[in-house]
Image (cartoon, rainbow, N blue to C red; front, side, top):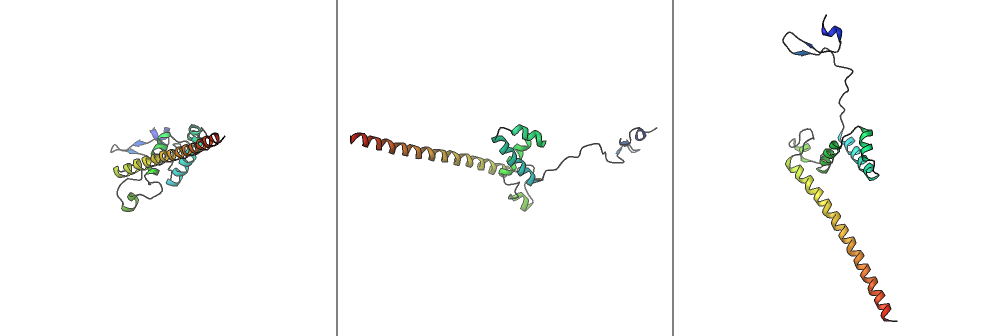
Amino acid sequence: MSIASIHPTANTVSENGTMDSAQPRQDQPRRRTITPTQKLAYLQGYEHAIQSGQGRGYLRTNGLYSSQIVEWRRLRDAGILDGNHPASTTGTGAKNGSKLTKEQAEIARLKKQLAASEQKLATTQTALDIMGKAHALLEQISKSADSK
């Protein structure tokens, strides 16, 4: 009696010592592949869910891991997910779009730093506008108090 007769999906060892799988296993789940477009959609959905405090639930519902989100953000920031990176046109750089080259990682880091600096500048400009308006209001109050 062979192992294959007991368990029909079991792998058997051939005479030369290699594993022989007669048929693919039907009971094993297949690894899903996620396209760059789907990754961008998942990122957008996750970022929306975070704003409403439902980030973890979104990950659970979609069967995703936070490490995937981190990697996909890195790829998006480097321009890899939307196809605007040198590796896709020249054939050099990242393999299968999964790893960043040193240059792409640096570009992503600098883009993130630029975005943070632009946000800080916008906050500073808003604060200066408010201070200017407050100063003008105080001058107006001072002039009206002096004229009485």
